[in-house]
Amino acid sequence: MQLNSIIANRDVSGPGSFVARSPATGEALGTVSMLAEDGARAAVAAARDAFPAWSATSFRTRQELLARWLKLMVAEADQLAELIARENGKPIAEARLVDVFAATEVLSFLARRLHRVLAEEPVPTWQVLFRHWRAGYRFDPLGVVAIVAPWNYPVGIPVNGIAAAVAAGNTVVFKPASATVLIGLALGDMARRAGFPPGVINTVALPGRATDALVDDPQVAKVIFTGSVGIGQRVAQRCAARLVPCQLELGGKDAAVVAADCDLERTARGLVWGAFMNTGQTCASIERAYVERAVYEPLLARVVELTMSLKVGDPLASDTDVGPMTTTDQREVVHRHVGDAIAGGARALTGGAMPGGPGFFYPPTVLVDVRDDMDVIREETFGPVLPMLPVKDLGEGIARANASRFGLTASGWTRSRETARRFQRELEAGVVMVNEHVVAFAEATGAWGGLRESGIGRTHGRYGLLEMCNVKYVAADFGRDRAAPWYYPYDEDFARFITVALPALYSHGAAKLQALLRLAATRRFRDRVRKGTIIVNAHRLF
Image (tube, rainbow, N blue to C red; front, top):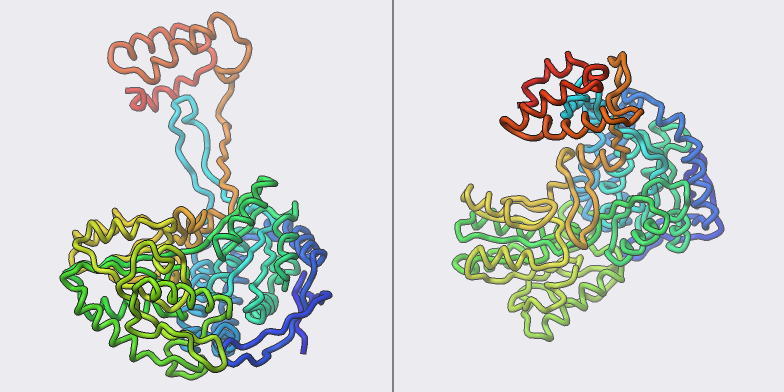
């Protein structure tokens, strides 16, 4: 059976084909018809045609459709989790936890709160002469949003982007990663069955070269990309060429800094889960742990013990902790980083070697005796590798954590509230957690995004929704029964008016009082300034 792209709620085939395979066994899971450049352009055209009607829908209508999508996802969670396990390689329980759960949470949040988060926001004016205005902000849709999603969280990440885009009134062209294209098409079909009108959500199976046609299409108003730094830079350059905004969630080399007063057991379990969940294929995985020397040895011993207890195997088995990596190319990156580190003097206390047999498995690996100049510390490994490094104090740990070209998330581990505040203040990242790591992605109100090469912009919650909007300042003047004081003609009286207006508004003491008296003596003030507005807001002048 061949699966097709979904454009304007219709199945559309293309000239190419792709065989989706299990990363655990290599077995074929299905064949997908791949579109070419004209298919990408057709999807954009369908989204553009749907935009006027969709952007005019009420918040209530959008919320009802998001709620239907949520209902379907909850009802079909088992089938969706199984597909994730088969195609992506996550253990099936973990697929429910970190992919399906994250998606349902954002759908639930938007279905319940959208009308409050994006409601028009009245704002009082500050300028005294404008105080009678009715002003505020509207949050209007942008148009067609292209969403290019990764393979590591094939449900949680794209659903967050798609739901936010359509909730804000945009239409979408969604391009799932080829490695998880079956999951992407399943999401597109679910949105179709939820009742979204034709053209609002289009899901396209595209090879890399055809994706350029999507990014370059002049009808695309914004591009949302999640993936590697290198490809993200190319996306940004292509968007810059036509002055269209892009939102990039790229790599991470996230650090955990452990204080001597940490809860040893909780910290050990948190580090192990934060490093090896999803086989380490998380932009927010713990890829560096800086531990105060006083607790380094006992914490390391417990981390090694917990790591050795993890069960690596069939992602469909309910007791599997760690599945295969999703792609063979990424496994090669991990193997190279670990091999280079060991060749340079590092030691692997667990794992550290490529296993034989079918599938893209790699064992959870704890490294010690690593140096800051090694790739395993400098570059994103994106696999099940946890380097642990001792530091003399928190100052050193924080400084080394911040010494990275990335800045997505970071965590601090401590019992002290004062130390927690220090972590939150001094760790340089878009998300900082204390005594936890990674899971902020599942909080629908928590903004998600990074600094430096970790990307541009934010997703999730209010700030994520605003990324999908034209934040429009609006003002109306219904109370003026005379010409504004700044209107033509410019004459000598106007010159006196504007000359004394500046000190009248912005100076202090006797100079302000003198300027106000001179201002009141001008004909422009007498004829064109609303005296009631000045009287009511006199406190703003002093």
